[in-house]
Amino acid sequence: MKQRLFAAFVALGLAAGPVQAQQCGGDFGQFVQGLKAEAIQRGHPQDIVDAFFRSARFDQRTLDADRRQGFFTVPFTEFSRRLISQNRIDNGRRNAERYGAVFDEIERRFGVSRGILLSFWAFETDFGGFQGDYNTLNSLVTLSHDCRRPELFRPQVFAALTLYQNGNFDPVNTQGAWAGEIGMVQMLPTDIVEHAIDGDGDGRISLQTSPADALLSGANILSSLGWRPREPWLIEVTIPDTLDWYQTGIHTSRSVSQWEADGVRARAGGSLPMPSAQASLILPEGRNGPAFIAYPNFSVLFEWNQSFTYVLTAAYFATRLEGAPVFDPRNPEPGLSGDQMRELQRLLVARGYDTGGTTGILGARTRAAVREVQRELGLPADAWPTPALLSALR
Image (cartoon, rainbow, N blue to C red; front, side, top):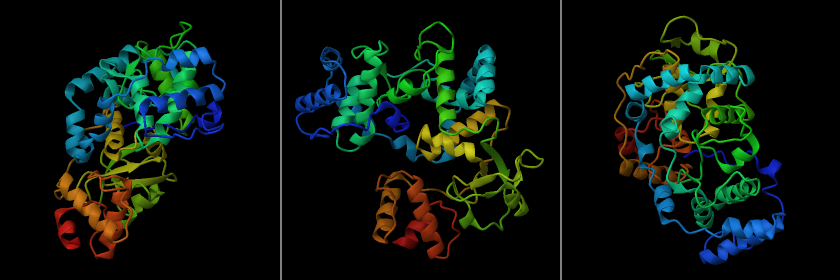
């Protein structure tokens, strides 16, 4: 799930003002009344607030979708093969040509590669073909009422109210993803308020029907998050067997020249660009699987979606759309099933490691814990959990 949720808080004033007592849970009707009171407290007119919240309903389907994210337990190779079809590649290249002038403008203004935007456009909505069928207001209010992550979603309700007050949101008919994202590249209300752009010059912003509006707005978000203009983000590499595996992973970086000195090479041949840049060596399925050098722009993508596998797949697909070959999957050791991953996380927690919960998803904190316990046990510390590691921990 994309989690661009805090970037506009200060500018919007979404974190300011007295806080209502009922932050989540309890009677849903009373909760909505609390939201309305807070909205008026923030300076929205009574009649606007009443009209905005009039249709708000609890949506169980949204909660079911929030709890059902098993797709993100799939290893990178399988995940990428599911998402990257020849049809998506062909459509991506056709759209790159069709909207070439838009992408030229994006690269001129923001320095964001067309491959990156095409990749997210493809994965989020199949190039606008399916943008979600959840009522956006109901999803946002429901997820704010739910006590799992209300701090993430409550501010989005007030951003949507700002859009409504400005004539840019229909609480009854606006539909999108279950987590409240709207439009072709799935933007949250806070991002729409702060970063939406009229890309086609028609005097209005339509993220659901105008590719130019959606793409320039998405590029503006990435730029605001620190995207480095015209720099690479991901390059597939070959690696020697003699690396210090503990140095690999997204949270460790070294200069590109240091990686090359240790025998890391661009798979396509030639020298890796930007030898003085800090970069991470990514091994999504361990030392025997595919390998990539990730530049600083790669980390920016986690502000779009916090799933490591999703971000890596999107980043890799962007390189494919710009001419890179299919990656070499090599021969990784088998990973863990969801139940095995949950058992591993429980065992790691029992040893004092922070895994970010026992979700069965191999997230950043679980990878970090795996790397540490591998080193503790004298195993290659490549952060890839295997049945052998699980057996050792048992």
